[in-house]
Length: 394
Image 1: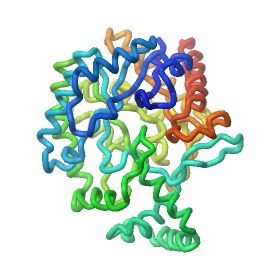
Image 2: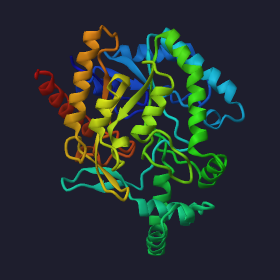
Image 3: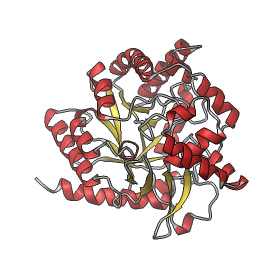
Image 4: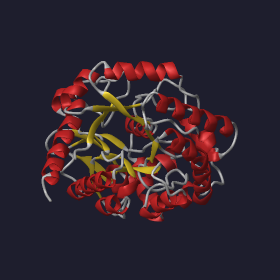
């Protein structure tokens, strides 16, 4: 029983075309209507137009990644009631169009965080990474966030101060732009002042309150998902620890257990993102795959090299510190269990998450970091080979 091998596509402006995707070995597409502002309901005709476009290239739109969760929903302020209603409307319209899996995240303000988008590997490929002291430089001395000095150990504050004093204007600007690029699929950065305002809007919110807000949101959308036959899959925080004074609640085994136990149904599932979870030295991704196997509705597979201090660098899919073999084994076994149980969701959609930038694409200006064609194609081939070997074992 093979995975549903899929590929993230950012729409018609993506430099990787649907025809390119079909040639990689992927059979399905993971995408979203990125042109629709966060909080708005997706028009049914736009969903159907995108579905037909993908089908016209011999592929299936298998998974939505993502329906954005508006910041008002996360804070339960402002127009959050309208935005929840719109989210449910979009869910129903997707189900009507035959799309029955939705990935989403509940990360405040930024979808992901990196400090370097051009780390050159020994083989000449280029990847991304996160250095905690460098992020401290941004937080402490560029963003000048109130209270930041209390969130960092004294040793990190001193190292960050020394590093900041040695940086010129160009390196400072590069770091700022890198951190502000926290929106997958877009090469646009938000203004620094806007980031400050967005963070300030969460003043006083702790992890317990954010978790309450998530569970309140799920209490409304899970019944809709059950009625429509849609599986939801929450994406882990990237990286899986608090940043910029903002709480994060989807980064550990305890977090995943709390979310899945709160509404104990298959529709309330998770996205197993090995790179996001695996960036945390405290997470064993193979153990997480085994523990939460029955609730994995989507899988992102990538690898990292990591340190106990919170630094990590993305690698080729089979080259990092994470046990991808163990993860794939648990997912293959879970598919067997689902098949034996007669579950309709017996095949798990999987996509190769991120890939290193290879020579042939390094001169291109429109490739979003991590989303090159060749790096992901290598990852997909490696994972398919790994899965094929495991599938042939008893």
